[in-house]
Length: 441
Image 1 (cartoon, one colour):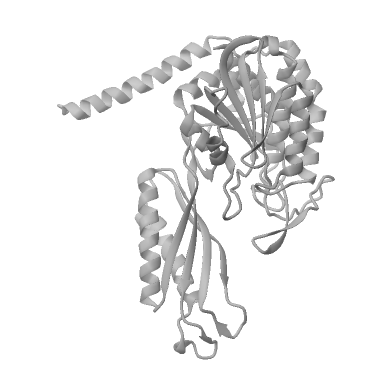
Image 2 (cartoon, one colour):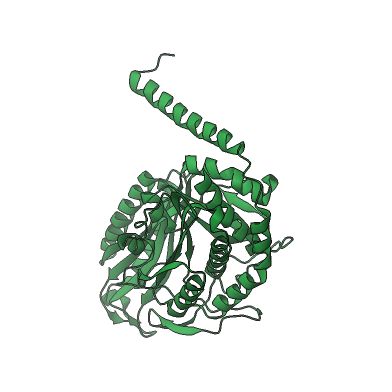
């Protein structure tokens, strides 16, 4: 078979890129990343109980996005006690610590998210959250229902250990404690986007960034990762449906926006089941909130639906958003109403740089054991860590937080969500060694 010049070049280019990644992996596999310094290992194991105590505190006193005031104060106090240069108030409540090693070199950033969720906790933990607040005009509990309390505590532990071993650091470590990963409140800026806008990756300029996420469905002692696209782009949408208000006993004299909303939701799902090429990548449309009406016998004038779209492919993203706009408009028109959609992008695709992933894989395998580091498939969850990865090479991986033998772990973002404290020690070890190894090479 004869290939055309453009196709031949494309295949050659792809082959060379894959070959480069393989070569990098082979080079780094031979560099002995598996050996953690004994003094560092002893110091990590010595602070495990302190890390767990921090986690229990943050879990018991959670704070929502852009409102992490006391959380930030505790982080700042700890970093200052370690003698670091500390920056506060970045992206409203973000905290950054800068640790300069005794030897010159690159700059590596380690990131932890610090916000909680509007979820009312429903379990029997001794450090269960009793915090309540008003979110979007609704009374709700506040809970670390996604494990961010563990992320904060792990990174605080890494900061303490590395600050005791500056002689082993070739370069600078930037500890980024980021607010509002779950998304800022409506009408506010926040999260990774705002941190970048305010210069968190500058002065000193970051060469690479690393992050982890604990996972309630992955056994303690296990790490999962994927090169390339790992988590989805996330869109938040608001559909406003307008009809004509009337008495509930005479629906023919009005236009029912609740009925139209139901038809639109049903139509949205056909975009996924009948129009999206799911054999290429996964995609999701979810409506998570519907608001309409004030009384049982009144057909209201309008209804509002709020939801999310998750995509892993840019072309599918464009298709789904275009068809949702068309479908909402046309279905509403068919029933005598109108509908519009407002969009807000929350994350882009979390993309693990292939060369950086290959470089650091031996570190993960050396710390956790090769048999405990597992390749995963992409997930339709989203992470605003992805915005950091648009600016500098980044690597984001998953840490086991499920008690071994648990066959029915509770999902993230639910009232019964639980994490086993035993999983955090591996997180401290891995993030510590990732920083040291990256800077050393």
